[in-house]
Image (tube, rainbow over all chains, first blue to last red; front, side, top):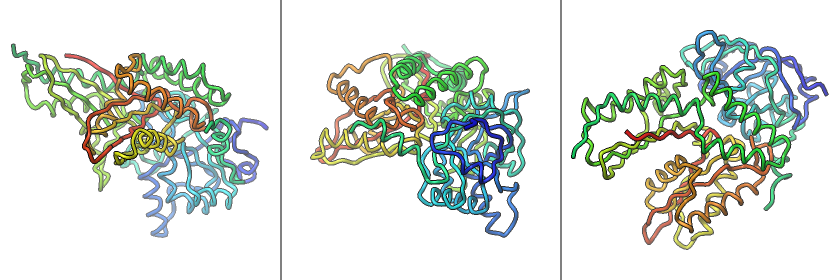
Amino acid sequence: MNNHMNVPITREEAERLSAGDYIYLTGTIYTARDAAHKRMQETLDRGEELPFNIKGNIIYYMGPSPAREGRPIGSAGPTTASRMDKYTPALLDMGLGAMIGKGKRSKEVIDAIIRNGSVYLAAVGGAGALLSQKIKKSEIIAYEDLGTEAIRRLEVENFPVIVVIDSRGNNLYETAIEEYKEE
Amino acid sequence: MIRTIKTEEIVKNIKEMCIESNYILSKDMEHVFMEAAEKEKSALGKQILNQLEENLTIAREDHIPICQDTGMAVIFMEIGQDVHIEGGSLKDAVNQGVREGYMEGYLRKSVVSPIDRINTQDNTPAVIHYDITEGDQISITVAPKGFGSENMSRVFMLKPADGLEGIKDAILTAVRDAGPNACPPMVVGVGIGGTFEKCTEMAKYALTRDLDHKTEDSQIRELEEEMLIKINKLGIGPGGLGGTVTALAVNIEAFPTHIAGLPVAVNICCHVNRHVHRVI
């Protein structure tokens, strides 16, 4: 398969991905982590619109370090996804295209990924300096008062990710560990 | 003889150490990284380790933090009993150093009030561990701690009957449960004995040890070596995506404990195990 993908993605494109695929993303993605998810949930509970159209879009669980003058962003690696598990199934049911983070997901999230033909991608945790070079533009679009936790629209180029949970529920965290386990 | 140290000197050093630790990984960590890349059997695991080495080079050369989680500032201070501190409160000086380091060093401010989650805007307060020692110097260790791995750390209040096997099981359980969440390959800090709080502080301190120096106590050293092998057989691997390098090091500290107990703390750190030491 072509390992370069333009984002956002369609459900059909997400469904073609398999756990273990190493792909490079180019296009627009959005950041949101703990505090932004809480606020998005409160927004939905009030019956209001989210600050961006979630359909087909990708959320990157990330809160950057401050940018130096002349640079789009500071260090920008993924944060642990499981803290967003509580909020994620509802967003997937609204059409969230994919998520980028690191670490395990709950059964409820995996079920919602399968149900909606979505996909969970991992970026390498702790590679924030390298990943920042793949981000060409960053703009805060909502919740500016949350600082690093504000929602940002990012333009990325060849942003490297690995498919961890695909739309059929295959989970690389489980299968790959089995391969190397000596117990 | 009493030696006077001015608080402004402490502010300046803490500030520089906060910045340095977030941009440049110490030599001992670089050494274990290089060894890991050679040892890793998984192709994807090797690729991830190479990316992480490249990440360290970019951070150092482009002056950008190694990881966006520039941590909560954990600071160990060993204060010589012949030191007199002049110019205001020591705690204020330490926090001023953290404030200046995080503001001027483009480091992320990640500290919030625990219930209302209001950001303090300058990454203070620091978590400071004081110890009084002999001499007329202050030894400072700055170890910014990221929370992806901190969240996966554990305390086990074992029973004496659980013994050495219980300790080994506790360490493996913590690492297995941490899995990909803690950004492996990790450094595992362990505190054995003491009380509830003593074992956790030892586990944190263990993470700041220089990995180039082997542990002197042979029983502890053998346990460290055995646990490193066992952890690397879990298969978690770099990024948690499978492989033979799950941990870069296991550092253990021990302290006598009560006849009724066996506390064990496992403090997990990601591969960005930051620790800078200075003596002033």
